[in-house]
Image 1 (cartoon, rainbow, N blue to C red):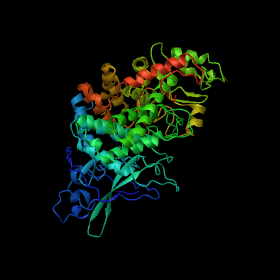
Image 2: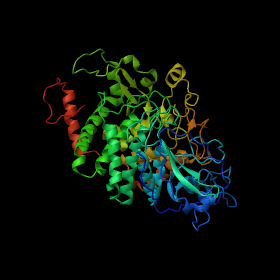
Image 3: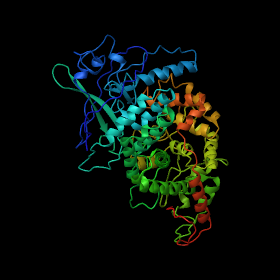
Image 4: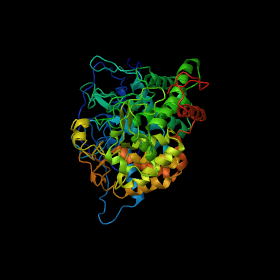
Length: 584
């Protein structure tokens, strides 16, 4: 259903940045999906240059100022060219210079809608003549930008982002005559300027993409989860705890939860998703129950439980949420965990066990254990595997899923420290010359051909296939601070600081040791910039990281203890062990 009425834009937050830059070429248009209803536009007359609105020229593409667009950017921020002095070649730039440059670039990436900031574009490379969809505001990409602004005390842009994406959630979403669940959040959106007449009168509209224009046409499962996490962080940081009590915000939370908690055929508490439905948005063999989605899901459930207002209509939803939290936590901690002891246990598994008390519950064949893992797993440390399905374990290490398992308390205290132990032990593999590998190891040879479909962008040790992504620095920092091991994050920040500015803030790096800028990496990638800034801000003020992490829930902890005892004693199905029943 379309949004009824006119969208009222909040008061503008004036984000300053140095200089006025030349405009970049017009953005490449993206074809919309069928059945979409356009959002209510800003009032056209308020943007007309004939009145005294100081933003009128900024929103009228036909009017220019000397040196470039007003405010140094187009409507989507893409026109801004970083007005930076040449970097001296014979000396390393001071950390303060790098941070100052990063803040300037982040502010230049800000997108405005009806004069108010609503997000940041994915990349702001002035030399990119074909930005594809990198000139859009992505939900997941904006999260580190939003956190950076929150930590600086600039709350309006995050509030506006939350409200406008919330409005987009209720839009009609159709692809090939099929409509997904109403709670689905868009992957991205773009501010488009629409001419109304020949006199230069224009209006602005928000144009979202729910996956129907994305490569592979995959719906963004993680968007709604990140939205809830950012909503909680906004309330905790701004102190505006009444914001989440708004009816429209409460409705948005419930729609996301109902979509995620809907009954299906799956026997597991984990979310079942297709390949490419999260940060890894291309075919990489993560279809099923990828760790990244489960960690974000757990974090979003805990956050939603804090945010939901107690009322009769929420009682059933909260009961379902609590039951899922306990089952999901037990499932991941028990079956996804891998260390040297567990690997040896899998190595000795018996197969084809038909019983309620089977040890090898998912019928994993020991021959699946890859040769690289036997030598790679350290004696001290461990991690959560990337995926688990019947007769299949994905033994790859996925950084975001493991780091967010620490942040969300999906991992136990022991497991959290073990993950960081592994990061330290395998520093040359996971960090090397630029933090941090999105996954390890890369798919190569026939495995790469079969799993990726010979994807030329995901060649071994590139992009999502073992590439190094600087944006992961902020998740690493939050995890390390939570476990009182900030020195690990500080060391990674120091590594990034050596070259990320001189490399022009790439999207990702290639090769095993991250020596090269990615072959198709966008420069001036916003979440690389924001991830670096958030890491620096949190290391300076560690207490502020509490807006992001979830504490261990005592009720869940007690229930898990009982469930673990029941599992270890191998009680037969149907025998009463717990006072309450939890679906595992």
